[in-house]
Length: 359
Image 1: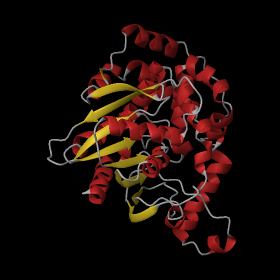
Image 2 (image 1 turned 120 degrees about the vertical axis):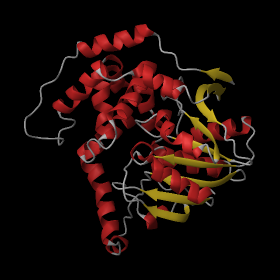
Image 3 (image 1 turned 180 degrees about the vertical axis):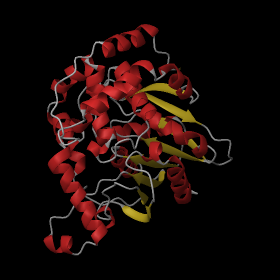
Image 4 (image 1 turned 45 degrees about the horizontal axis):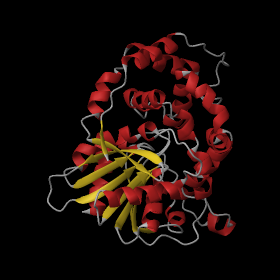
């Protein structure tokens, strides 16, 4: 394992500024809001702030407060932050992000969590400083195997796993692969697959029906990004690699929940994730996870047995009875505020729920 410090050459930052300043903006329809995608005024405003207000160096320094390392696992470079707790007997906790997030999202919870846990915060292969990937096959199960190997190399005989979005798929997969060492799994932004049984659907509570309907809306109106990245990620990658404004718009659509949670994630947090992806050239390889991990969206052959907690934030489509078909759910918490990106939108609530489950 080698110590790693983020140190972006100034020439790359200058190139980013020049490209932003030369953005060729597309036309757009008036009066359609978010129904066709991110409105031009939203992207222009955030791009202008990226150009003249956002400070990458400030966030680079903030992220470098986290001790970081790289190692090679299964032929792929893996970057991770490793924050040791001063608490005697602290439980190691493996934190996994999703898309279009990066490990940087957990920088907001690392301080308070490290009071009670040793933290291991890897970048998913293909993302940020763990990318790009150089071979096919980096789906959920292979990532989970890499995580189990990483924890073995760090000498942790027992640990917990936490994740949201794609992390809510990867973390349970780690527990299935490493059941003797994973003591519990905590999930947020958990997608649950609605039943095809009409009788079962009719028995849902009003809240559960709304959440199941939200999943249907996502499929019908918002899933285009997942379909493209799940089928033609390379074609998309050319535009994302060449245009920072294009990458900003592509990721911003997700951070704003396709217009349903505009402004829910602070603009500096959006831009930190987007800037990391731009500077590392990983917008294309991170999107490949949707193709590589497509088989993991269905139900597993057997439900997981590891004790699992689910934190449900406003906007999540999680339905408990569906989650219980997949996970051994022993704790289910409905949180009053926050959203899909809980580590950014409601860090204190997420920290409290993780503590309540593992301690």
